[in-house]
Length: 204
Image (cartoon, rainbow, N blue to C red; front, side, top):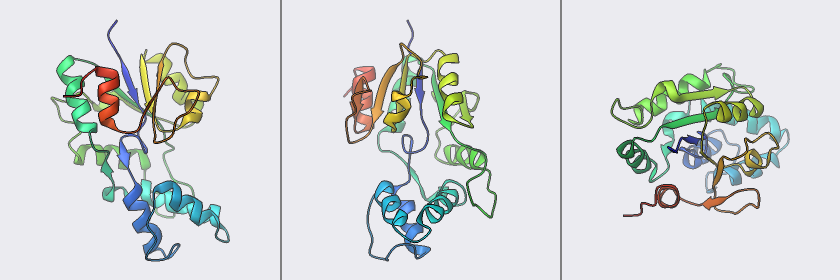
């Protein structure tokens, strides 16, 4: 059976850590000397007065107008090349609303993500990833239905709650892309090099 690989977008393909940190400091939500991951930025901002509102507004900016400062996770492009060489179809399935919460600029987040992928060279005509294999869904339920309808054999995501959801399609290998393990996942991979080795048996 040919593998059909599904991948989440935010914080799985695209690394926002640096841009979240920089934007939070520029907007004076955090001190200029603050340094931390996206999750650490989130946790610190949520401690502020109206912290949840400030965090969601920051997310709207980073995922939209600020997305150009983000980078692909190291090793992702190599993974795509290996999939291309083996003729394996790759799909991006992401829970992404069209507009961010509290974003006064009303930037189309889906178009921003597609533009970022094109700018990074991930949608090359000879590559494993194609624009017609990218799907943005309004909520998690639709994301899980899309994974099932595409016939994915493997899915890679940074959120364990996606895999723990009762609606996650049975029989799809659950690859958690994170530094911590979770009992609901079949495989834990902290890097894309580990994903490549685990799924493709390719670590050269």
